[in-house]
Length: 275
Picture 1 (cartoon, helix red, strand yellow):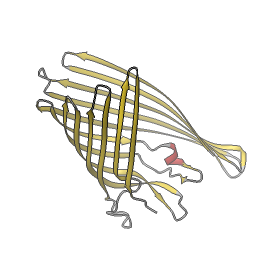
Picture 2: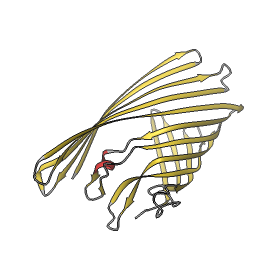
Picture 3: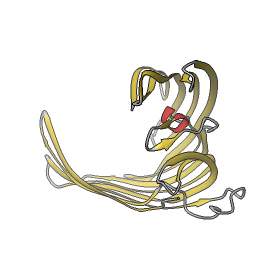
Picture 4: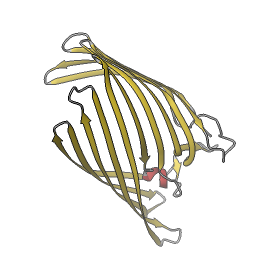
């Protein structure tokens, strides 16, 4: 049996200086991951993580409000403590510390009235979860050598805001080195591994206001992925496992202050399964 508990605290402070906005935030999270052996209820494996994510961002707006820029710096610090019960009943303890840095640069411009073009480039980091590192009994086996997922992300979007609502189209490209993906053996047991990959696609988003209290909205994503890790020729140039390559969402929203009701339908398709 696997039990997971999480507790977090987020603090954010913003400072307005004319056309500039400075924002800093600190996110402190505590994760407890406990695995019990149902054949021996007297012992359990305990893993704890303390994660601190801090960020500093700057936003600038021109006097005409036609130009906007954004720059952000993020830093992550983690400490993992593990107590593992051995076959003879003894307990082995270990600890590890890691830190990662990410950043983002963005630019947007109102080209004509109600039409905005935006571009972003970022280096993002995703730290493996405790489940990805240590497994989940019956579903996944652990991989304690798993590295954090690191990516360079690029996107370009065009958006229009009108009296009837909004519409937006975004094209994006991601290079992941390494990525974190799930693979499965013949028994259906999964294991997360690192590999190199690319993901690119288009996302469409829109909302139409029917009345002051009723609107329709939708979102669609079409993307492709490719395993670019030449070290594994079996999976080389194949799709990335665990990624839906098509996604659709349509819905309706009713606003009757102070209440809001949403009804939506989502369909995900084209999932590549690696076994």
